[in-house]
Length: 586
Image (cartoon, rainbow, N blue to C red; front, side):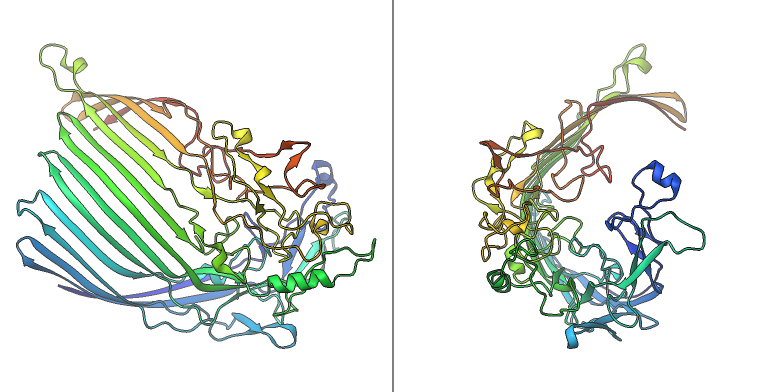
């Protein structure tokens, strides 16, 4: 039996003033349209965000102190049955800022930022029991049944109170940096004029109109893990194991735009619009009513959930006539309402419709239904006689990986506000069964199965393909489900031939010929990559769909795992590669 406790503390200092999708910028950014304008010192001042700076005090000193206690024991009930059981209690300290530089929202008078002494309440109920059993069925150690269940809590990550880069507001990093109020950060832009010594480059500083808050009722996320498996020895060298593994996640992190208009507000606003071309068009931007002083008001919550179920099997052989091998197969399904606490890809953490987060329940972003892996090493038997250094020490090894594609979905990357929510990354309507062409990456998905989520054909439009083409009162959230599409499969076989030779008593030489992706199978990334969004693009201006003169548009696969941004995405995917190596061990 064992008892224990844990004390943890954390400190963090963040000095940052501008958040972009790829990195934090400390002193502002300047964009230039080309080499000539760069040499002339003429910034790009077209207002696209390529030249801007954040003004204000951005130094923060955060802290978090956590404690943990546990008790666990193992009890042998009979010579064939063993029980393990225990209990943990964890207190994850409330993240704070030593100078009181954390902010919340005061909803009076349209909304404003005010300091808060505590972002969310303490959670002292993190009791985590667990129990497991192992039973030797025959008493000979060859057939064993194991089962277990446990509850596990997740810690709070300090960075979610400091840095957020959501898709809707792009820069509203967290409760440490207020958008409005006496200590609000101000953003200025670079003017389109020649940089002159003594003349400010940035001007027009104004408070950020967005904010990323924290739900004061946020609780500690937790997950239940459970499993049941059978392990059977087959002969003296081989073991077969088959089991069920599952989990249920509760109170998981996600964030919502609590200032987003509801479907009823969107429809009412559209129907109330009176067009007056060319001064205005219908539909228009829907007012924000929860806190009108803000545009986007995101809020971190512990309201998501998940479940995972799987059949897992493995066959292991060790030292059987020179062969050591393991084959694994997993058949699983993971479903959730948020797959991460950040929107690295749209709808990882923020639903398309923040007023109906349950509507984004779908396949987890990391869901892989079937996966098979096989690795082996075979050493040829030793031969007697002459030339033993040449004849002996030969072997083969390899790794085979076969798996289904990961799920994905299509979004509009700010082409238009077709839903009326103003979030910028709507999903389209699904009007037919999607058709794939796995063998043709240039025509991977037929987009004729999708259309803009509104009735197309508003006579009061501005001749663009945005939301002004929607008939007032018909805008809605698209019916395409989150992560409802299937990405390309992954298939790869790596193989090598090796020769080990003893050169002296303590010196060994190993010669290897290694073949990566031996069959030269093309493996493409999930369509979210390399741009972290699957942009469906603007619809046909005449129909709102994706067919022009009877010819459908297609979504193309453009990147493999070896060349994409953040390489590698999937750990492989390059063409066949061959390398030779000589390794000396002494």
